[in-house]
Amino acid sequence: MPANPPGRHLAAPLPPAPARRSLLRGSLAASAGLALGGAGLAAPAFALSGRPEARWGVQTGDVTARSGLVWARSDRPARMIVETSATESFRRVRRHHGPSLGAGSDFTGTTFLRGLPPGEQIHYRVVLSDLDDPRRTSEPVLGTFRTAPERRLDGVRFLWSGDIAGQGWGINPDIGGFRAFEAMRRLDPDFFLCSGDTVYADGPLQASVALPDGRVWRNLVTPEKAKVAETLDEYRGNFRYNLLDRNVRAFNAQVPTVVQWDDHEVRNNWYPGQILDDARYAEKDVDVLAARASRAFSEYFPVSTLRAGPGPGAVGAATGGRMHRVVRYGPLLDVFVLDMRSYRNANSAGRQADDATGILGAEQLAWLKRELSRSRAVWKVLAADMPIGLVVPDGATAFEAIAQGDPGAPLGRELQIAELLRFVKHRRITGTVWLTADVHYTSAQHYAPERAAFQDFAPFWEFVSGPLAAGGFPANKLDATFGPERVFVRAPERANVSPMESPQYFGEVDIDGGSGELTVRLRGDDDTVLFTKVLRPGLIGQ
Image 1: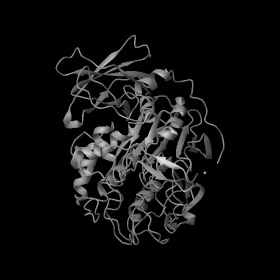
Image 2: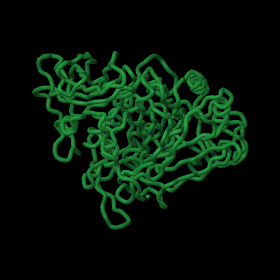
Image 3: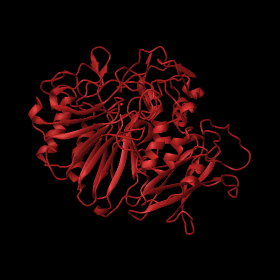
Image 4: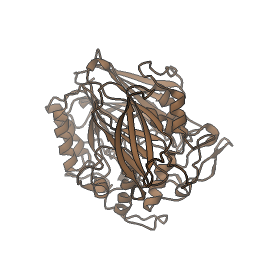
């Protein structure tokens, strides 16, 4: 994947937001920006007099037909209360009592909403109550989301991308901050799949960067973004950083997120057990850094599995949970969220003839096979934080993803993917589509056995889209082991192109409730559709 620096084409315009959502856009944007004035690009200092404040907006996550998670952060110790209603007037409300927010969680908390009506617009407001005097409450912060449908005819539409504030390109007030989030908000999807690299904890920002064309990029810089993150508070500060952007807060208040992590939440190209040779880090043990990073991740994102039961790996060690999970979004869609970071073996040349650990680990692979077999959804999206057939190097001789450039029979981590693809074919599991980000460009790859060295699998598609707010990079080489054909690609010709010089990218998936067809659109943040592919349900080898 693109590392830190020393460190695309017009089509159709964005449509207006669908009428099926009844939103007070102005009130949502205003509440998302509470107490963050001007351009919404700077955070005020904590003021402990008066009432609690939720200055970082609200988020929802892992929304299903009858449940969802709501997140908030307070500026002081407080009790989180969420009120939900079927209407934006809140004439009739249901109250959900949430956790106490304190220093142990960096004043963040998540409230689990149960018993929601399926396929309905839910309006909610978060209120923070002073722990010493419950009568002192914050101004409510408003949000909305739509629960998953139980009827197939309702259809599903979501977006995906990743890679935020990377390669030295942070929040630039001159261009309005993270503009891609506003482009995505206008599309008003049912949810957003964030495919990892949600922050760049290893990517310090400078106040200004000179561009090749003579312009100057300006960054908002906070203390935690001025160096690589090592302490828990520094990791927390990286997650807070993105919430300084008004576009992010407005998007979070309107669109639920299904989120996963990759490497930059900890450190570029990390793997369990790694000992760093990097002068920027006083802490050299990556397992220590990963535990701190995963705790901060669990505090700043609403993820259903991160607080449930003991689990192995870096995430489990820190939070008592796991990243990998299935988010079931009605009869049309199951999203299989993978963790290709916590269970992998060390990055290497990838030529092992026997590799039981691979990139998923044996336990996660068994889980994925089991859940794919149980799924009755028409479409099964495999949300991967790394691509399959794209060669992603780690230095001169090692490889970071699955492919290692050898076009022959599977070796190394490819063996585990071959086992999974064989399983999908022999169990006649239809409707699998792979989505990822990571490589900082957008593309569509079709994998077919007649082009492959390994042929015991059914053809499938992999779509790549990103970054959302990071440097753009040239397209990676393909590895022929699984027979990928690059059907479309849009990428810059040089490395680390700034968001001022090239569009940022995200993808859209639209599943029609009548026909069951799945349409993928690869989009730019400049109101463009770059590529469209329609897949029909129940077919092998689209």
